[in-house]
Length: 184
Image (cartoon, rainbow, N blue to C red; front, side):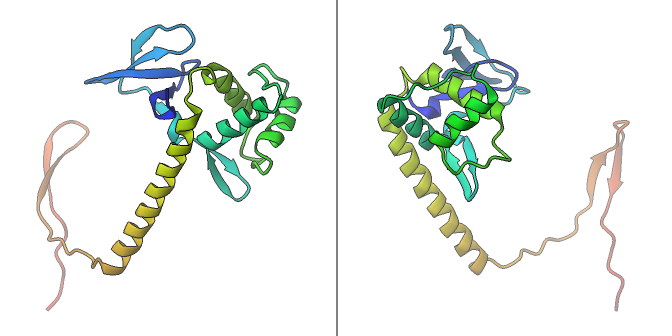
């Protein structure tokens, strides 16, 4: 299983695996109990591959943080659960990510991270985390180059004023137009 296949749904505990898609959202399976359900348009779904944690000098992708947790566990450290005390969570987070932003990474975020790790460590393909990071770096580099190229070569577009129809709160259509220039 890869990070791009795992999501967190706001308002629902735990993590979920994407198993399909329907016209209104995603079909998910809970990693905790295996129950399947569909999301709707109003639910906020966060893909774990897109999540980052704040550092004092920027951000670090969740994949890198999970690799750090795995390295600590391989070195003999016991990874805490989500029920760790706040001060202990801060101390352990300093081992995982030494320069994390202490003002923007809350203890609840740390506890959630530890809980997520415990939930996915058995099924997660840690070798794919390296590929995820490389792909993200390549994408960011391409986006920056595209933005720089766009800024230097694009000229502003001129649009004409066109009369449009819009609806008011009561549902009645009203004609609106843009003001004309006064001049010679």
